[in-house]
Length: 299
Image (cartoon, rainbow, N blue to C red; front, side):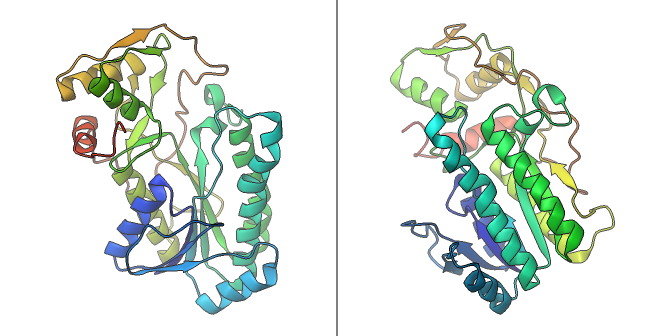
């Protein structure tokens, strides 16, 4: 398969590209601005023009791509008033530009990346924040394209993620840092439920969905939404115990040291359907131990 990937320099993107390359796919990534490629070989580089869509349509036509995996987005838990334009530009306008170029050039399929945060309190749609609202806005606009063009469109929605080579300030990174420094970390009361997936399981879901779209799997319908869900969910306090058992060290956490954030997700979206034939394979204990071997964690 020949695949074009946006957001390839992010945490999930880097793992996904490496997985696709190992499977023998022909991969081209989009770089934005002054970004440089983190990949040493077997990955082509392109920079979409964005302001001259005709050039990008010609690029996709010439490339004869089977599909696009759209990972690029701006993630903000909370936004400031002057960040609204950046959110819409990154999460709506840019996605439309890529989708329009793909639809006009005969690309066969497009995998979008969504978030559980589009479903606050397990609603059909209720955005936790403006980031989630912008992701929903792109999905709504995308419906026009998959209803009026030949392109197949699916969304894969993610919850919390973790794994090796993760430099984001995520929960396991924070806990490993305080394990090393001995400092105390103020956290919420810890009763919120966490649905967290290892990056290997996430990229396997993307890879399987790409194959299903290419092969015309009967259980994958145009416009369908799928979810990557953990095999087991934990409260934040329970997850901390699992982490302590894996590391053999007590975490210095001050539970209740801060309030729950506004619109805290206490119970992640439950109604998502997994990609046909996909199941999570990385147990949480194995996943935690794998990141403990990663020297970048906790820095």
